[in-house]
Image (cartoon, rainbow, N blue to C red; front, side, top):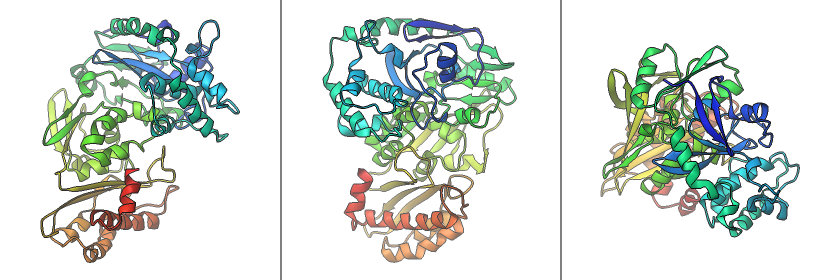
Length: 487
């Protein structure tokens, strides 16, 4: 084992031999290093005022991603390059093109959110030479401006894209090869174990080591992206021990596509899954584009969304409707099951001691099948679902239903199939009459709760109406709805 976490912070190396397992990057920057450009606005990954870039090696290639420092734990940073807004300007004070564009386009009003916007735009500037309006807006989904100054900020992004001086100007581009080499040297060859505040953080150096760590501890907390666990700390003030970090494990971040399906490693982030799925399963790609902001999509993982078992997780309904299977792994071996069987009850999943989610296997929809996902939330972007429904339908030449799977989140204590509705539709002609006859079956499948996101009555009626919408779209009678869904 090794007893230190090492990473680069702007142009300096940091080595920590003691750390609070739930200490956040934002607190470290502001309190330990006095880098106060990153702000705390929400402490839950919503507002983007704390945005920084984190660079890491992905199969030997240096990749930078915008992340929320307020819910990113120090334990997840080994062998990474953390870049804050203080690093962008030249030593003589000359502003970076992104910063200068914000000045020229009057993109800052009260200024509190400005450093976060600058870092999100800088991440876009590094990865897109000529972003279109949609790409700019996607990059800014996770940044909130309470002064409502978005249009000048978009214009600043457009100006910055046109301003690309010599690579020697940019603090990352001019040292990319050097940074790549240094991060390679910082990669841990052994499992890292640190103590702080009387608790431990563990960074396994392989999936096999992860299995052994979980077998050796009674109640370890596994952290991949921390987009959920982070709020246990910042909002619920929970003291977690031990915390096991897995975001660096390449073995959990593979995506393998075949003619029959796609296997997604549990550590694959939403952003990576979006790139892979939007071509093969377009509806799934559109769903991922509405999960959180870009920072959350860079951090959050498909496996984590499944493992925590939330009834309002966005990906399980879609995966269940597609008939996905789950692989669980432990020191004793592997176990496979249909994903729908993993969710037992609210807060309870079929995961035995020492097991962790290793991979998700998603069957590829047949070319002539119909698949749609509908996320209902108060805001279109960066919001938690009130309910989320997924529909997978196959028809024969006579327009008869030969296969249908319907699953919803937000309608029960777990993500759950609408089996009574499916039974009412199976073998029926796909018609308005069949839909009308099947709608009452929702009352047998679901008894949703009322909470601040929606009432039970709203959820039940909306679920029924989404079935009607799905029929209208698949029957080809409502092209405007199809255009809306593809937007």
